[in-house]
Image (cartoon, rainbow, N blue to C red; front, top):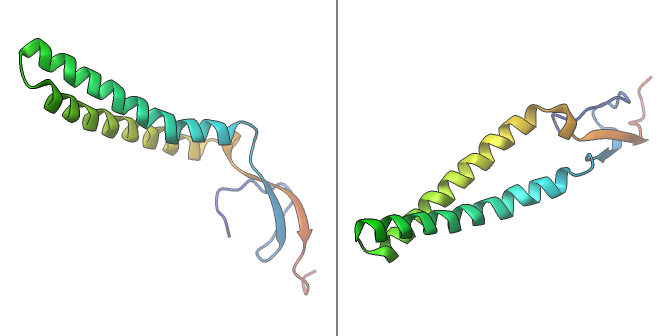
Amino acid sequence: MLTGVIDPLGARVGDTVEVEIPEGVRSRAAFAIYVVPVAGLFVGYLAGDLLSRALGGASDLAGAGGAVAGLVMALLAVRGVERRMLCARSVAPRVSAIIARVSGRT
């Protein structure tokens, strides 16, 4: 049984149902999973490199450290947004049809 699914049709455990994901949720999730971490990686590298050049250090090492820090921060941000979205009914999957009911029930 999948939890967090809005069930306006009253499906029961064992029923075969069709589940619908609201429009736009997949594209927003794909953006969050793929684009945000890569952007964090590049921004972190750039920040580390620029900071290192300003301080006169080894820019490659600082860039790599900045990239790791940017990636970690981006992943933490994605996780925070995910937790908030799990509570939002606007992005929750919905039972759109009951295909077959389990026999033996009234």
